[in-house]
Amino acid sequence: IRMANKEEKLVKYLQIFDENIKDVEEINGEILIKSLDFNQKVPLKIFGYGFIKFFNYICALVSNEANYILIDEIENGLHYKTTKKLIESLIELSRKNNIQMFISTHSLEFLSSVEKVANEKEFKDLGVFNIYRYKENVYCKHYQSEQLKDLLNNGIELRR
Image (cartoon, rainbow, N blue to C red; front, side, top):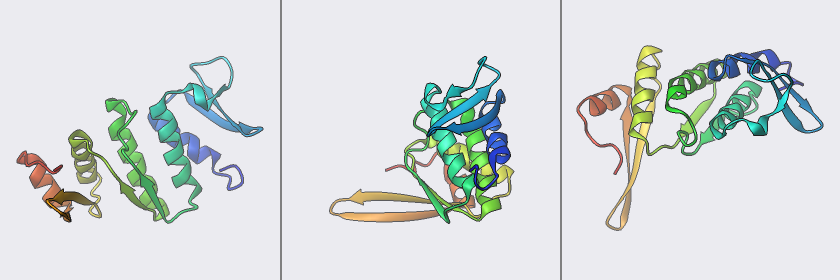
């Protein structure tokens, strides 16, 4: 991030998660965060699991070193109040950097939040895949944005 002069962009996106963050610095391999919540810069590792995950996602997207990002069980460790902010950040960064995201979840609440944010942001490139086993076979069902919205609105279970 530092070599690409993208520290300000990183801080901007981290502030979506926590508005008290003012700076990020790496010293001797340790990431330090300057926040209004503390009198001095503190190690990233003292923050909660959800923030650390968010930090890693945002770093991967801001550094723009990949064409795609894989995130498994994205909702784990995230506070429900930050879910919308996370989704908005990921959509914005993926659009700006032309990065394709593959995200796995078992959370119906997370899927619902994704659908709502995608609809609000007019993000039409959303695809949801339900991969499931039936008897001896594995199947994959693809849903586009509008189909996902209809299924969620009608209470149809997507997770088998």
